[in-house]
Amino acid sequence: MEVEQRLFMRYGREVPRGTVLFRENDPGREMYIIQSGKVKISKKVRNLEKTLAILGKGDFFGEMSILNNKPRSATAEVVEDARLLVIDPQTFETMLRGNAEIAIRMIKNLAARLQEADRQIENLLLRDHTSRVVNTLSKLASEKGQQTPEGIRFELSQEELAIATAVSLEQVREILRKLVAARILVIEGDRVTIPDRDLLGRYFQYLEMKEQFEGA
Image 1 (tube, rainbow, N blue to C red):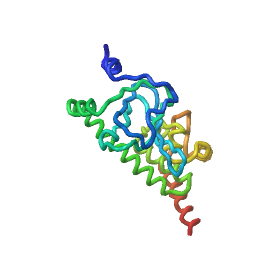
Image 2: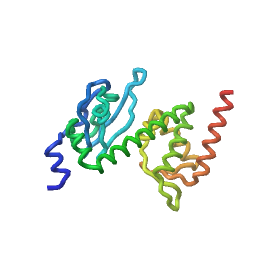
Image 3: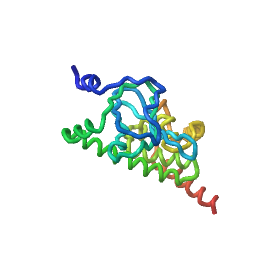
Image 4: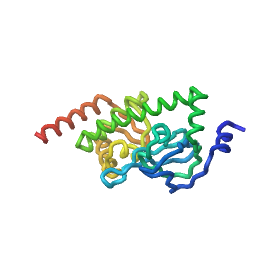
């Protein structure tokens, strides 16, 4: 029997779509690891629910309540039927003490979340929605992009871009349509290609100057 199945037999739970695992400010004594399916992490901001991330296979969440013994900082809802490993504090501590690989992965995950938080804060300082989208695309090209003969390419859904920029999905679609029409981007499904990175950078500089002079 493979390791993943053994873990599921011991710690696993099948959770249907629509299940709220926990809500913001709930007490928390468990963390979760996703074996399959998807989970939405969201938070209330000024009485509006904002999606922070959509997590998938291999991702884990809820560990902060175990680490700092504080209430949940966000809400977790299953948005695609999921198989989850549910880990209590004692098991979590045993896993960290007994497996350096898990501990290192946890540290890397927390560092990535801090980096993403910094990027979102930086992006939110940009008032113009197009600037937010272009800035995010430029940074993702540096972090995730692969050089191809057609340009820098990476995978990113419009929904993920809307979450990362705090711009509505409708506005993101309109901005992308204009960028494609201007030949700054090429989009095929969830595949984004930037033919000329310098052109994208110059366009962002133009947007910054435009915002600066309009606010003067």
